[in-house]
Amino acid sequence: MKITSKELRNKWLSFYKERGHVDCGAVSLIGDGSTGVMFNVAGMQPLMPYLLGEKHPMGTRLCNVQGCMRTVDIEEVGDESHFTFFEMMGNWSLGDYFKKEKTKWTVDFLTKEIGLDINKLCTTVFAGNEYVEKDTEIVQYLLDAGIKKENIFFLKENWWDLPGTVNTPCGPDNEWFYPLNDTPCSPTCNATCECGRWVEIGNDVYMQYLKKEDGSVELLKNKNVDTGFGFERSLIYINGLTDGYKTDLFVDVIEHIEKSTALTYGENKEQTKSMRIIADHIRTSVMLIGDRNGILPSNVGAGYILRRILRRAVRYANKINLNVCELANVAKIFIEKVYNEAYPLLVEKEEYILTEINKEIDKFSKALELGTKEFEKVINGIERKNQFMKQSNPDYIEEKTINGKSAFRLFDTFGFPIEMTIEMAEERGFNVDKSGFDEAFKAHQELARTSSAGSFKGGLADGSEETVRLHTACHMLLAALRKKFGTHIEQKGSNITSERLRFDFNFDRKLTDEEVVEIEQLVNDEIKKCTPVERLEMSFKQAKEQGGYGVHKADENETVSVYKIGDFDFQICGGPHAKNTSELKNFKISKQEAVSAGVRRIKAIINF
Image 1 (cartoon, rainbow, N blue to C red):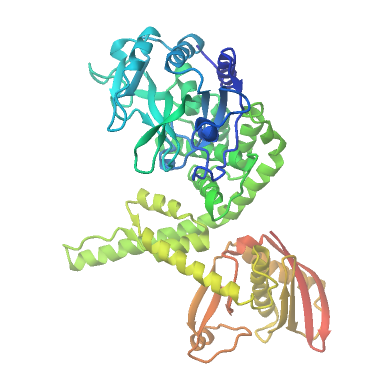
Image 2 (cartoon, helix red, strand yellow; image 1 turned 180 degrees about the vertical axis):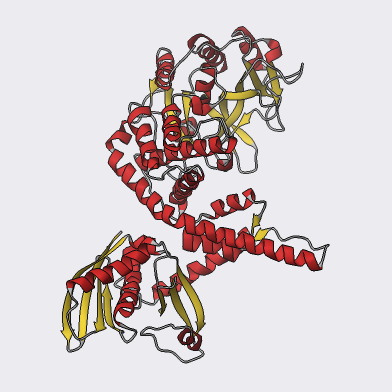
């Protein structure tokens, strides 16, 4: 039997509606904080209050197809069956029917509606623990529904609760398994085997207990049923596949990537892994940005997860020479073709979603090449040290750890999430000093806090991202003026808001139109180079000896901050600044005027 994703969605909802259920719809992917988790990680999570006894406005029998998000095993994405965003087909009884009815309906749906072979269908049931006895009641219901006795297995692991929470519903469950193929690994190969032939497609949880802080349980007032069947995994089985990325949820996206790279999916293991990661991560990004409570990439909380996922997609696009501009086209396929009916809000928000994806891709892709080069420098430095030490001491144990300071620089200067650095290191057989990174990050936060308390020195109106970038543009403007007219050019004043910069300098005439264009070009050429903006600390004397300049005055031995922009600028300043010139996008002089005898003023803007 061949079933498309849209057909499967409709079959599930229709089946349970015919049995008195109401489609309660999907809720936001973003956690509301009530259960202590960042995202909705299970279809039942939004129904928590009702499983605990509150009356649901839609009744006691509910069903839906709910989007979920999990990142605990993000490193596994790239194989045939792992996804960060996925959907769960769910149905619930809130104190209504229980094990007998649910067992029959599950078997009927799997065998009669979507065509799985009842003779191959296996289930595992709860073997008991110190708090709850073995679930023998369910066995007769399974036999009555047509499940073979030899296909029923007792396991202690068949107990469901929501990880990381307390005072939430829990209970024994039936997990349902189906073989990927008809070739057992041994005569005893069954659903409990770890050979990879058997994969769980869903489970029925009988929530009749409340999970307490000490691990014990107490009976709930109502006996509830919570069913969750993996939408993607069900599509795999129904269509006789072993690869989730060959279902119609991904096939158009994979074809697009193939055409854009001239590669063939499945031909090369690493290239195929990259294609899967790109497809999964862009789908997840679309869902998170297009959600009713949509988020944007940032350096904290859920926004950091989104940023990490998008930047990981950019990295793997580069691995297979996929132009990063094509990532937005991948997003369009998901919005316009795959989920246009199930998630109409995505279509409404399409322009917004694509704009935000492109912003993040553009922000990171320019720095990725430079950051990767820096990463290689770090690795090569460690390897050179190892080689040198081995020559003098054959018993020397090779160093295989990137220190926290280097990892933080990749994060702070090039925008590499620490998880990306760890992943890249592992690919090369190295580790990362995560605790050292955390210490460097904490020190950076403290410095930023202290800087903010200093009322934003240097003519900044505030500490916003826009103003900070315009401050960097001020430095680059002065550097360009000095390159054009000589090092006698000095700053005579500045004022920076979130919209524009105003910069005063010593000059005795109006700049010609040609000179204005040349100054703009000098700045924009450096922006296009994606040059890191580095903050260095040294004595005032050392800074001056190395060519540092600026309005800052200090004693010779006083420690000062110097901001270095490649070979373009080396200026003494208290900050703050952009991390990379690419953040400035484009520099444009909007106006010039006289301030007083021998002093000119330039007003300029940048595109964010």
